[in-house]
Image (cartoon, rainbow, N blue to C red; front, top):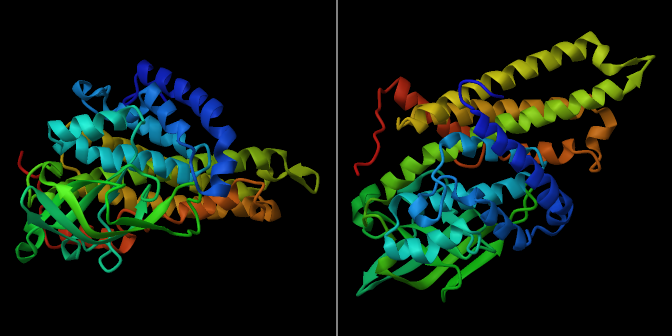
Length: 389
């Protein structure tokens, strides 16, 4: 798709990535979906190719490329039909590593960021809690200062990579009396004494590990604070824009893959002497679905462009996730229907794709929360501003 957003270099990157995924990832997907465990070797292969360092500064071993390289990575990951594998990769690179890229001190960069770029260490982000969900300010996890350390207590849930990761970027209240101004981000070693994980059994995203994490008097060095203590809420809100755009891009790419597969199937499946792509009812339904997908894709590209230009795209990224994930669910549902009985068979891709797609309107802020954010912006005239510095 050369044009406004993609250069010839972008296209060469896409072709190289496709070949890499076909050779190194696709042969293992069925095993990882079955076991719920992604072999460690693939992380280092991604690191060798530079895929984890697309957004990381060159000084930290990254490539520091524009955001449309990330768009390509996200799109192609959706086309191997494992939402779980894709989630494990982007949760590391664009949830955990985003906070390291922006706010890590020199110690954290050497100890965690540089190994993350080359795939030697896997990260996850711990924000959501069993009793909090999208209510970040209402979190109960605490980190009490004790000399040169913080003592961390509490729990997190729905944490992608939480079982098999090497470190956790944790949000905790260091000053519970200060509300959202008392939240701090800390990097916690997964192997620290007092950290435990319970692996959750999910409807979809089967290849990825999703955990409920518990912290029982975990000692965290004060040098593992990201940015400034007490500024965690602002850091989280800023990162949410990227996370929601990521999920919007995932959704339009997932829908594009579903339509492509359905069209191929319909061009080969015959009933009553003609292929089913010749029936007007199905043709027109495809036209509607494709139009919706294309509208979301173009919108998401425009939001990515604004973000690349430095705009604080809270509203736009929220709209991206809300509308794109709703569209992708509808496309997956309808494309499964186009396959008839075969759509319900696990040997065909639509059953898994439908399950994986259903997480879209839930993770990273439910659609109900996103509508309230948009309502506050449009009706209450609330302004969301980037954190200073």
